[in-house]
Amino acid sequence: MKAVIFDLDGVITDTAEYHYLAWKSLADELNLPFDKEFNEKLKGVSRMESLELILSLGDTAYSDEEKKALAEKKNDLYKEMIAKVTPADLLPGIEALLKELQEAGIGTALASASKNAPFILDRLGVTHYFNHVVDVNLIKQGKPDPEIFLTGAAKLGVLPEECVGIEDAEAGIESILSAGMYAVGVGTPAQMQKADLIVSSTAELSLSLLKENFKQ
Ligand code: B16
Ligand code: MG
Image (cartoon, rainbow, N blue to C red; front, side):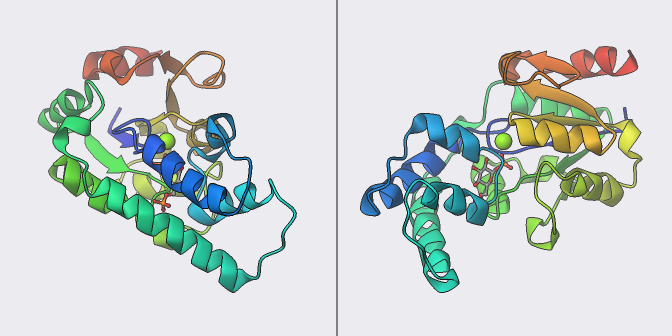
């Protein structure tokens, strides 16, 4: 195991609630029946794809320009919310794991679908733990395509089979597996069916757990 590549939302911090609240406000304005259950479909999915899914709840057709304005409106609200993020919003066990990886000289990268990821890492105070943050603006295919995880490995100068990927979304696990990496899923066995290793909480993650299982 030479590197660990992390997802952000749901693994490092729980920004899903803020994404939900910002989309909910937009959906209410458009009179669309958006709820928490539907929100599950948006995890790991890009901003524009998320908007398309939400708009599919109604039958109004929007021009590309209108869609851009709607996505921008959601993002402005989301940005107001994430401005309040602090290091206390790190999920349990994550900072300890990042420290262990750094001390052991194991590479780390962030493979998040979020264009707000660098800002959130700064707010959490963990930017310095990452050797590379994949610039999602340069990624052509979103998760479940392997491109974002493969880019992370290439930037770290390691082979995909030397990497562990950690995700909380089904699309993310598929992305890791099709990249040829070892997939760790945070969630329930039902949600993380395809993952090589499942933990119910990030608090269970540690360097020794990853090393022991990676060998198998
Ligand atoms: P943004 P991840 C994803 O983050 C979120 O899970 C998803 O809900 C969101 O739509 C996507 O980022 C894009 O975020 O609008 O900030 O660019 O799980 O890949 O870290
Ligand atoms: Mg996620």
